[in-house]
Amino acid sequence: MRIAALWTLRAESLRATTAFASRAIDVEQFSEPETLLEAWKETDFDAILVQADTALSRDWLDVLRTRGASRAPIVAVGAGDTYSIAQALMRGADDYATEAEGATGLVRRVLARVRAGASPAQGLVLRVGLYSLDTAQATLASPNHRVRLTARECSLAQVLFEHPGRLATVEMLSAALFGNTELANKRSIEQHLYKLRQKCVLISKQQGTPLHIESVYASGYRLRA
Image 1 (cartoon, rainbow, N blue to C red):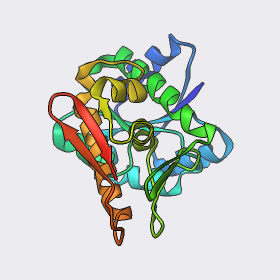
Image 2 (cartoon, helix red, strand yellow):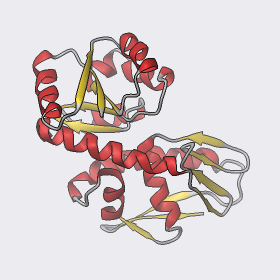
Image 3 (cartoon, rainbow, N blue to C red):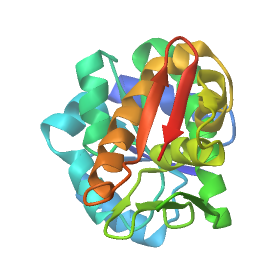
């Protein structure tokens, strides 16, 4: 496994590199997105790490998501306040690791993220009413509209499409996204669901029956169409 890291803080970069090295995972360091993108053309990175604060201030996430040569998951790393997490996810990050998780927590999150992203490649197409989810292409579609999903959004959508009209618990969604059922992941799930809901609204335009994700208090979510 090979990880690319777009980082400017040397101390933080060294801690992360050491943690990944302990799991026999190579980390290639970059200080600018352009050099990472050039290397990306030649190397199949399994995941991309970016320093969240710098990435947002310099539009790095936009550059990586629009010009990236593959769909390797992008994981932003930062302090973890609600605003920063929301901004990183909306700008193209697939996940957000907080500094409080430490280097070991970062490694676990990235490994879970890579595992979660592997399932869409199986090429499953799921349908609910007028709507379809293509996991191979990571697209959500209606007869008139089609939108791309991030890998995290696609994993969430797959669980919901597999249980249309039925409760998808927070534990089920957490297992699909992170490989575990810890309720501490609920905030991250909600951030990804927020973007997925927006895309459901987009493809529902001009359709008689909208596609929407219903919240079930203290239990989970339900897909309605």
